[in-house]
Image 1: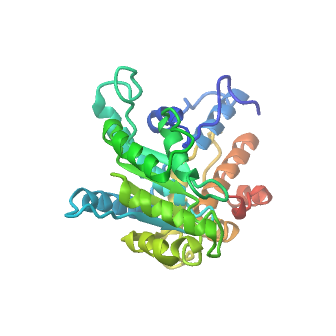
Image 2 (image 1 turned 180 degrees about the vertical axis):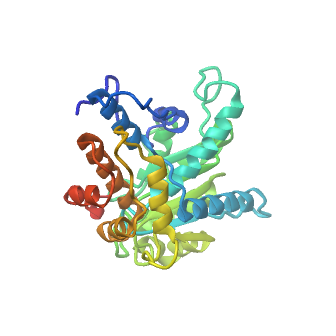
Image 3 (image 1 turned 120 degrees about the vertical axis):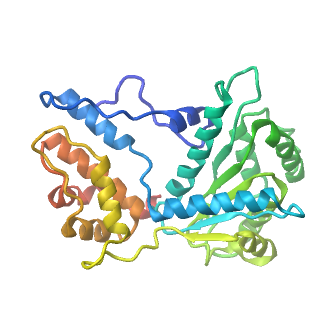
Length: 336
């Protein structure tokens, strides 16, 4: 299926994409007419654009960030609390963090009374999102944060202290409230010179910038990033540590997180054919979503969307059969 004219991938690492990510609407296609290829494409695109699915993890992350804001805003000595989201690949960590970051940003921008990038004012940047560069070391993370803000580069010989000082000065002007640092485990599982450098930089960012830091990663319990003197300070400042995707398996006698996820998916996804139904709340579908996704909610959501695309194109139900038909299309969790 060809992409609609003007369609492009939006990236949270790019501040220019945030107005589209934060403010864009996803209106439901008009239904009830004949099922045409055009309608199938519109329904398929609508399903793929569904973003926020509320789970216990999105609520826990939002509560933790709000509490960290409160503690940081009222700290007696300027001490800093960060939020650490730990979990397996495709468990929903980034989704949980960005759901709240987008929500806060939307509230701020709605109150501005102007475009957030109005050239007559400093650009409004309530949240920054960066990924830890591969083999992160030295200034690479600070440079990524600076690049997100979109300001001219600092002199080539600028130090970490120079970047932190420049970011401290710009933060109040842009209204900075938080920074999401993704793939914080990225330098590897064992303590190394790279992991020690990253821990030093993370500590400097957490204690040196007037923003709530949300650190996302996999295997923080084993990662060298949170070991050693600087790593300990990062870990111990993570007063809000959340293990994302740590859900119990479906239970035939109760309603748990997997059942609620199936209900949310059934409520949000659409099919163009009036005779087609969505049945992602059956015991078989819930069990299959759990087992096929290896217990990773983020992967389960991606799978359900692919199964929805299959059902849309084949004018069939979105059910256990559609899940099985797309099982081999699942991305590998290790690719996230």
